Image (cartoon, rainbow, N blue to C red; front, side, top):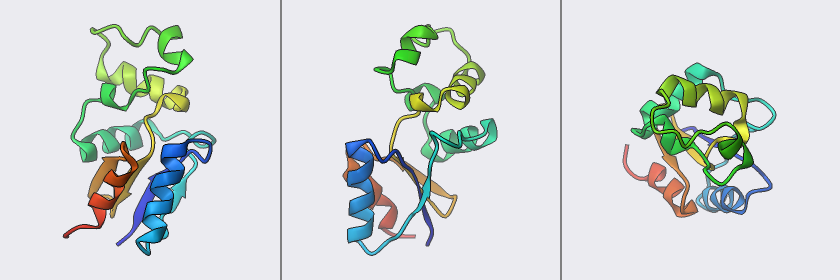
Length: 119
């Protein structure tokens, strides 16, 4: 089993998710998405694994959300994915991925433990 964690060390929820995984005996691969933004393909894959719309990955409290007018309901998924790629601070965190087959948004952080159950 391989767990990857889209991680921001300055985020308390992200640090808590990392601690929970480590306490469970899992050392995840950390993805520093702020310094190495995910590609459009990676973001589209995350959306598919999470089973959510791209809009669900947006952090609505970030300045870029307002500046880029991302609240517009008619924005396409492609436009939202492009904004996430160009402004990685907008990406909801943490996101944990197991074996490139399942993923969860760690809000609350305990959700990452769902990836350790069955299969």
